[in-house]
Image (cartoon, rainbow, N blue to C red; front, side, top):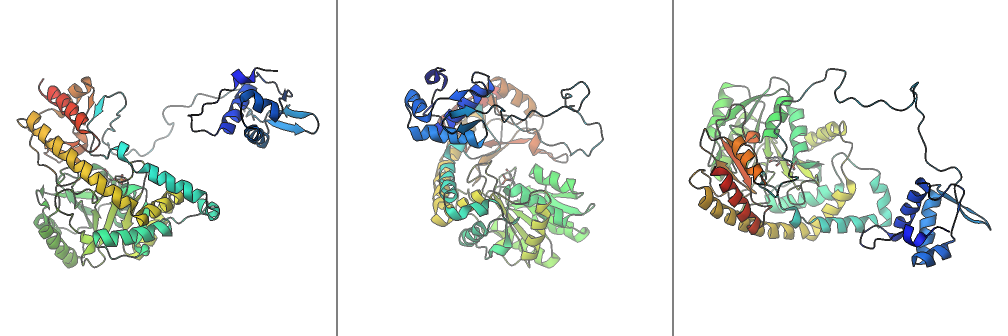
Length: 489
Ligand SMILES: Cc1ncc(COP(=O)(O)O)c(C=O)c1O
């Protein structure tokens, strides 16, 4: 008999059920040829004694192997490794056998997207000052996983894993409609809501239903690059208007509307990307008047509404009287974790129906389990409690960050303490080279942007977002120390 007690090692900390570990290891031993096809395995009682496990665990492991056809039970003989192993080896159709190496470039011509900002790769860096992301260490993921587990254990759940609406689960849309009514003054029903994979998908869907090639779209002079690129990809011509410390200049928007036929306006009302300014209440009122007067379609991208530290946030344009012209977009990705892709689009019901039809062409439905778990967390108040905690934590981090930044780089950069969001917008002198700064910081083990993702081709800004929310005060101190060193060369 093989020395199973040394061949099968159980790792109690791995998180994988023990029976699964036994089954996996036996499969591995069979694949490696150490247990031959046709050989007999020890009985469950013997193997359990050898491995010091409960017999039921070994029975579960053997049941798993039998289901996968690795073994079979022969009455009165025992447990035999299948003479024909269940490994299907595909047959080659090539004369010489085998498979060709897959090519790195296509043999045909295809449409290429416009140049996109380089994605920062944090791997290998000691510290990262990012675009303004939440701290993954503070994510409420354990709560979400707890809810997923609870839901998946209920008997009625299985069918829900198969079907789902392209507009999102009814549970989440109802919970979110209540939540948005209470927190953002949006008097909506679930039919006005669509759950999307992050705010980004909402931006794309809304824009795709509005924009035809050649249409004019108003955006900020500096703007969220992935919105710019999305509108341009759909064929829009962008018309840029200034953004000052009150937000987008509404007089400039009105002037553009007077001289051109405008299809749509895109506005980020809280903590505008990249400059972090908030559209003031006066400008909101002025803009609403213009929207009504011109019947102007608007995408209001309020991706960062939940993180406001000064006074309270300001109610969205969508909560005002806009005649069905404001499409409102929000996101849960910053409240949960960037890779839990839940965002939402608020719109009149006819638009939501059409957006769901369009979404189906690229993504049939969202993740029911996550959506329902999230609905439960919203209803139980867990999300609100988490947001309160995060706001307190991020406000403290913002204060530490801004104080240290002023001390270290106040002579070089100009910035205003943001009233919300997760980043500071730092302006550098016109000719200061951000790519060189970024390269010097990288040499010191600090990853920062090279500024390119914040600069549209028409922009005269030379700035970069410095995210503070994902760093502890000690990390902030170290990161700013490194940034100062990189800037002082
Ligand atoms: C202004 C703006 N809108 C939308 C998004 C997309 O967010 P999400 O992760 O929800 O897709 C971002 C991402 O940072 C953003 O800055």
